[in-house]
Length: 492
Image 1 (cartoon, rainbow, N blue to C red):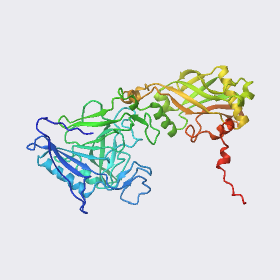
Image 2: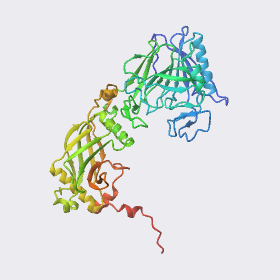
Image 3: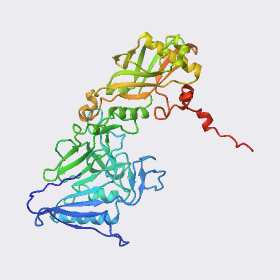
Image 4: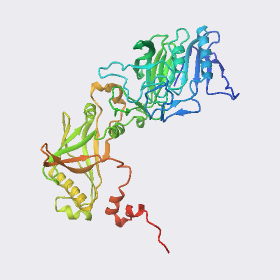
């Protein structure tokens, strides 16, 4: 979102506009330039729009051009194949000429594709809090982690002739596409390797826009601005706080961008989450994506002597990233207890009443995670479920409900994002009990590891058809194997 400042509300706003046509004589309304301002006698802003085009590269299956330096991999944020065209170059050059002649106070470019945009796995800041600098070769066909979602033509021309081009520079380049808000500043410098000289565009500033108007930097240096999403939630990566190594799952409220050319300031305009609470991103969703990228971010494990032993005290293991987030407040288990189907195991301490039962252990935080302590009765109930699994060959449904709190580790720059998160909703996911033989260093069986963890594959979204059939056959659930089996047609 871009809102240029106006000097007066009394005279009507005047503007002149032009659009160039393609060689096929069809009107090209995707590329345009508008000279915007209150008074035609004073320099006015030149607003330039660059269309995406008719094609995009989203698979990036192979780099057939040996002159390209494509380091973005196979699965990429789509790139514009058509941009920047010769028509777009002409429109830009015309706006720049007006500025050089003193007829335009500033040049603002709008495009969906980006010029500089850090990929999801690239944080804005280092662990020490400094800007995470990046570099891009000044050439056509240069695709790095710092320009994801960009365009594929005339990159070198735009970097050399439009960015920081003294006297005719583009003042502001607004883009979107990635849903990751950012302000980038950079400059071209020369590098050499083995006496081979080349130009690089070095990113010197990378940050998210503040919710308060902040200065963009020196005049004459092009501000490369990426807006977040004004509808769905945006994404962000400040310091790898919720990054799984390939992408970031830090979620941000919907927002736009406001720039005031008079003061050369930028501001992120955010949805009012007090009035629209549902617009707050949910931490539990971000954690679920993080877990899918980094399996076993959270699990319970304890050493036991017997295969069917269920301990009353478990160690909750967290990986280093979950430990740093420090966002877990407690844990509850939800287990389904059968009625008549479980009466055979009720004598072993189980509860024969049918339905869902919650188990809330004591939660004791530790340096590497937490210790959870169950009552003997709750441990006995879990043991009956393991017995049911062995006798029936079916795992009874079980879910973990993890109570969350606002992340509090200052090293993760929580003041920038944690307050914008909904941390009240619990993180709920399916879990499964299992015991794994523990082999010591001498190759001998030395007890078992009791594990409660999230099973791999699709669980929680797809009904447990086999369990439903075995548990509720009398209510109409059919044998899934009989339904999905393929047999030869019978001859009549």
